[in-house]
Length: 436
Image (cartoon, rainbow, N blue to C red; front, side, top):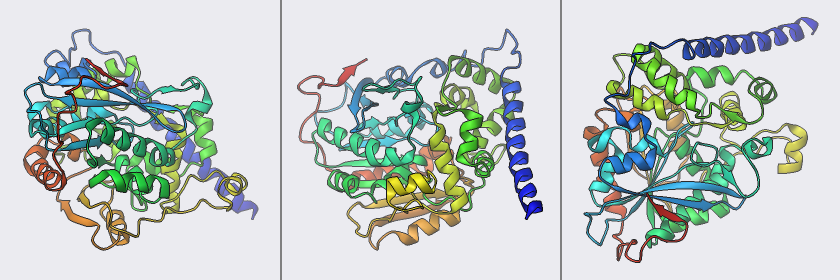
C-alpha cells in the first residue's frame, strides 16, 4: 500500500512537472525577442480589429447588443446587418463559438470565406454570441473579473444560462418566433447540455428551428488533444493551485501583439500551439488557411475560467457527459448525490439537428461523436456527415470550408428558416443595442 501511494504521488508530481515544463517552454518562446522589422499584420488589417470593426471593414454595419443572464452576467452579441439588404430577411441565425474562442472566429477568413459573412450575403440576419468570460463578456451586475467569485462557473452555466439567454434575446430582437443555431465545439456541448435541462430545453425548443453542430463535443473519452489530455491527469484542486482560481489564457495586449509576430517567424510553431489548445492537425495535412495564422493568433485564445478547463478535464477522465464534480461533500449539498449527475440527452426530437464532424479531429473524436449520435432520439438528426481529413478548426478557419461545407449549411438553414415579416431595424436600434 505504501508503495502504491508513493507511486501515485510520483505520477501526480510527474504530470504537474510535465505540464509546468511544457507551459514554461511555450511562455519562453512567446516572450522571446521578436525582430524589430517583423510586421506580420502589415497586409492583414484584421489582426488589429475587434469583431465589430472586422464586420465594418468588409462592408457590413455591425451592431453591439448586450443581454443579461439570470445569474447576472452581461453577454455581448454582435449582429451583422447589410445596408443593401431588402426589408425582409431569410431568417435569423445565431453562431456560437467554441472553447477559448469568441465571436471573431466566424469573421476571420475575409468576406468570401467566413461563414458569418456568407450567411449575411445570402440574406440571413446573423448574430454572433460570446460566452461569459471571454474578452467580450467580462461584465457582471456586481462582480469584477479581478474577483475569484466572478470565475466560479463552467460550461454547466453556459448551458443553463448563457445559451438560452442569447437564443431568447435574438428571437425577440429579430422579431421571429424561431431562429437557427450553429455551434462549434464547446458551442455544441452547451447546446446538448441545455437540451437536457428542462428550463433551458423549453427555451431552445420554443425558439430553434434548427441546430447545426460543427465538431460536436459531449463525450471526451477518446480525446487526444495534447493540452486537455495532459490536464486530464491533474485534479481540479491542482489546476487551481497551478493556474489560480480565475481566468485561463485570457486575451491580453501582450498576447495580441506577440503571437502574430511569432506566427510570422514560425508558422509550424504557431499552428502547433493552436492545435495543442483546440485539436487541429498542424502541417501540410491541415485545411486551415495558412496565410491567416497571424489573424487567428491575434484573436485566439480569448480566455475562459480555470473551472471550465477543469470541467473539460473531468470529462476526459470520467468518460461521462455530466455536471461539474465538486467532490463528494459539495456534490451532496448541490446535487443531493455524492457524484455529479449525468446530462440525459433529450427524449424528443423537437429541435432538428444536423451534425458535421471531422475524421482527424483530436478533440471531437469520431468514436465519441458516434456515441453521442446513437443516444439522440430517432428523427432528431436530419443530417449527419463526417468530413474526411478535416480537423477541429477546419469548420471555422478552413480555407476550403466555403466550398465544401458552407453551401450545405446555407441550404439547411434556409430549408428550416422562416423569413422575418419585416426588417427588425425598421424602427431604429432597439434598447440594449448600439450601432458601430
